Length: 192
Image: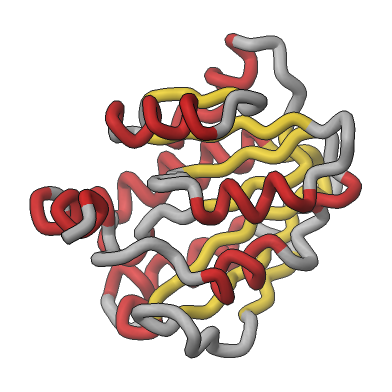
C-alpha cells in the first residue's frame, strides 16, 4: 500500500483522503484559476505533489510557486521533486507571514488541497484569513470539496464562509473521475 494511504490511516484529520487527487481533479482545479497571468501562485496542502505538477505545467516563465505543507516528510519529498519552488513547513494560516519571510509578493492565485470539511470552524477561519491576507485584490482562491463532505456540518459552514468572505464563488460540475468525487470552489477576492 502507498505511504499516502498509511498517512491517511494514521492522520485522517490532517490528510483527509485515502488517495491522491486524480488527473481529472488536478486539471479542473488549475484550469480558469488565472495561473497563466500570475506572478505568484501559492498552494496549500500539496501532499504528494500531484496538483503541484499540474500547476507547474501552467506557470508562465517568470511566475513563482510557493507551497505550504504541514507534514515534514511530504515537504521534504516536495523539495526534492520540485527544486524550483519554495516549500514552507507549517500551518497554511500563516501563509502571509511565510511569503513575507522570503520577500515574496502577495499571491495572484491560491490553490488548496486542504480537507476543509473535516476542520473545526476556528481552523477554517484562521486559514481563510491567512488566504485573504495573502491574496492580491481580485485574486482567486480555488479549493475542492468531496461530495460527501459538502453535507457535513463543517462542509456546509465552510461554503457559507466562502460566500461571505469573497466577492464571487462558483462551483464546478462534479468531477466523477476522482476518488471520492469532488467539486471545485473558485472564489474571487473583493477588489479594494
